[in-house]
Image (cartoon, rainbow, N blue to C red):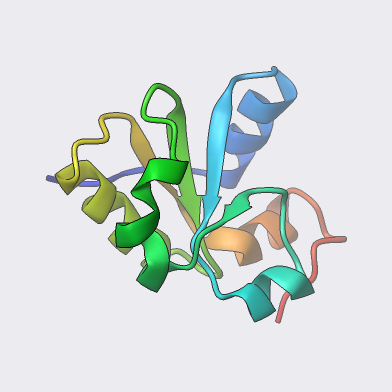
Length: 106
């Protein structure tokens, strides 16, 4: 399965339009404390045991620092039976560069 990716600009448009997206932040807690865009924090290593916290009826957008962990999370979720899963291309760094410069990069 090839993971679908969403660009930060498209995510911003969808959020602004009020689309009911579930933002899943798969970074570590220390990274989340530095900067975040309001997603639910479930670090990638904890994802298998916390699947019950996800809403399979909503589009899930996984995000991380630069995009590699969110791709892994999206592949895992697809294999676990979640149908509408996307990975944020470029992660929080792309968000900071192209959407909101107030979001800190680290």
